Length: 347
Image (cartoon, rainbow, N blue to C red; front, side):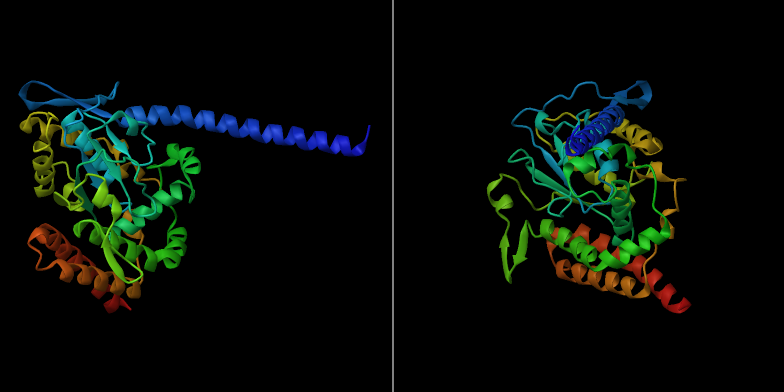
């Protein structure tokens, strides 16, 4: 037999094996993914005495076209997963995600979570959303949390790569050495993106391109009010007990037209249930890798973080619509400054 034909046959067989292995891997991941997503869709059931249970949602029920739909926007790593499950449990409606990994984006849900306009997000809902809730988090914790997700997704660059890595999300944290390498390469960029993200939504969608500030076309022509109805600090919201941020969110959802919420007293119960179920959020990583506080910043980076957060606070200090944001940023500044001063003292 011709040696070239033999070589081609071997290459063809090798290619077939690679394709078959990839297809098997994707199929296995799809099965895992379907199971994971089913477990994360939380349906609450109110019992006597304001007790409750949370069970998987079997069917996604679309809300009416005239219902008020809410976009949950946040910089990556700022607690959208926890907020997603709390909203779902309080409303008994599924919450979609902008990349549609939940496979509910086309089913007219009452809320969608997104990281847009950060590069990790995508405007995929057309004109379906009506209002915005901005979820913020101290960059001291948001940036490491964002990196952990990037690590779990194996630093994927596209939808398909992220898709097959879904079973690995919320499962482990990287080593400190891996974190420090990524941190030093990406800190300046992500610190700027964090501030720009908040500024974009608080300004109603304004952004500066080539020295010119203008409102993004999405906020002009997509029938959405881009200025947030509420600003919620994740680190305060992330509690098994109701906090000011929980009541802010409840207030926005209560004013949502044609979407019925569960009884107010029972909401405390579902908050407690979601918080206790660590598989529904970041706490599922505990015990698999270093603790969150191990992912630190250099003194110079903390100084940049402090200056950037202060500059953002000062920009909105006199804005009557930004009182909540300014209060939240002041807390961040105090926390960052304490760590910064400690590192200066120890150096």
